[in-house]
Length: 437
Image (cartoon, rainbow, N blue to C red; front, side, top):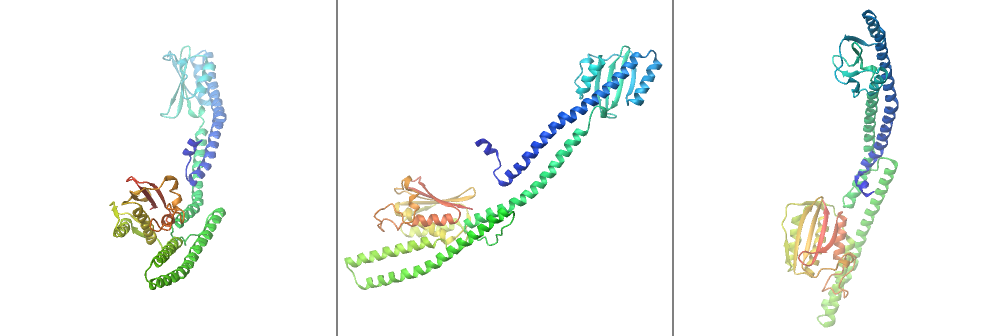
């Protein structure tokens, strides 16, 4: 069953065409078989019996003739009333065992002549100068040569039937392909619109079309798109207010603490306020997501160079593998934030970081390797959850607020790609970013 599935077409167009073509071919095979077994077989047998009967009659009349004049009358009668061109060759003998030569193109004629004549004969098919069947019959005192039209032993209705059947099938198949392609086109456009919207592109020009079910799916997609866009817009507007409301009191608290001077308790409060501000900024960055930024063509290695340069200014050792020009349509600021989070995370846990990018088929893969302790395989999916941290103490000195990897995956999935964690070849953790081209 699995092997049969692999042989089936993968596209809806191919499978729909297979549904149309398969019954058509089966019907034609059955019809052709029945036609051959019934009609063509019966007609060929009757034609062979008619011609064999005429030949046997002429041979019998010649055998019963007493002189040359009577034989000439028989040959003239055969030519006039039976459509047989006859010629008697006195004293001739058929070469070889002609009685065993039953392998001509007309098996029915061979069998019937053998049964009715009871004497040596030979059947030949000639196309020049006319399409004729030649029958040579061995008589007691010579050879009787008989020539007649091929139509007397062959029915052309078989070829006509096959030609009409194949021709009509080709016409019907062309019509089916034409209408089927027009029905598949709206489904393909809907799939392209959904894929483009999933990658963050605007699809305002999409219009439902096609059959009623496809139109219904297209209308549902438009409603879903509007709901998602409205939700993003409302979230962005809400976060703008939350950002102002939360940052203002934190700023006042920092000013009051700065005016209180130095001390152990003041330093502790300053640390708490800084942690609160860091958490608020991290939460806002996560909730803000991609905002209303539009994708633009971006030279990937130039963007990686900027992010790596900032990481080096923080004191990290980062190697950037050079590569060819790769241009991809992305939300530049969002992807920059994603890569920054991944590189900062690698610098936080390792001493050396290696960044590389390359094309892989229809996608671009960015790898960020570090030589740190890594993450156990059973926890690699857990770290993508919001506010999840491997450090249970939640100490800001040993890690962030648990949103860096969450933001990174959210950004990449918003581009239609994904982020996965693997074991690094340099001993630590590898963050693999896959973006569609």
